[in-house]
Image (cartoon, rainbow, N blue to C red; front, side, top):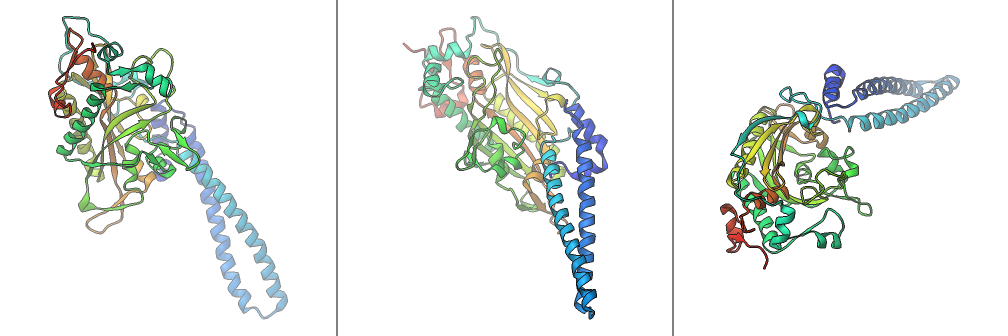
Length: 426
């Protein structure tokens, strides 16, 4: 199950409201309740008949009258056929129920503000001032090619639209960002993981990506493997079907992966430059914890993402997502956006989400309480720390100089091989 079926049974109005608040159709709740009713009725009838068959089977063994014995055998043959029909009906009902349940999103946390779409997200705070330049700052799509570090034409030549090539100091700057972020998160208490970039269908289901987002995923049909849309997926999969000892919680993980998404790019918005594409890099933070710890862990992860922005010297703001913009898995999400002066807009570089037990239920991840009580579902949290290419865009555009050069942020210079300033190509 995905959402706890008991919640839907006992609090259907809560689930209906959650769907309505998310701007989703609440009708599936009625379908689920009806299928669940039929399922339980079918199980009850089947179990009653099986009990009758067991009882009569004992009587058959004791029967001395051949006619009576044969009559009971014939009656049980009819019962057996009915049980077989009920078993088939039960499988069909469970498949239908499972199919609908698998696309019901998580219930928003009460602290998630109501809103119809992203225009109603709430700005929690801003940190830093919008930078002022004594020259007209360039957008990265002009700045990068002038520096000789960003090549759109060769990306299209190699693969197609929405792909690009980073060259020389540009490729090195991207690598520096990834290496520095991983090292920062290790200092913040996370353990680095290097995970596969392809995963099984079950792993994607456990992480809440399938079946809801199948159209956005790249799939190798022959081997039935899927390219990861985010490191959140394999990090969830690390403990799929595991029972974790309470003493080992919380678990803090960080990982770099390329991310592959077959996003439908609409004309007009986010189509210029490298803000949105089918392949991008991202460093992820992920936490497994006890339910009573997840609220505090959410604040920790947000603070860790904010530290990443602050140490890069970027002006940023934190937004709380409203119900209409909340991700499928999430109960409560903070977005971190950085200011990019060339494109003159805020760019989202991280979404920090508390998922509660939603993924743990899908992926069957539990922990054993120290007192030996009943196994409990863990809570999971995830967040980018940070995502490329938007962080790269913000660094290039904020650190550009009047002569067209870009100063490398001090925290990244260790990985730049002596390049403190990226100069325009001759």
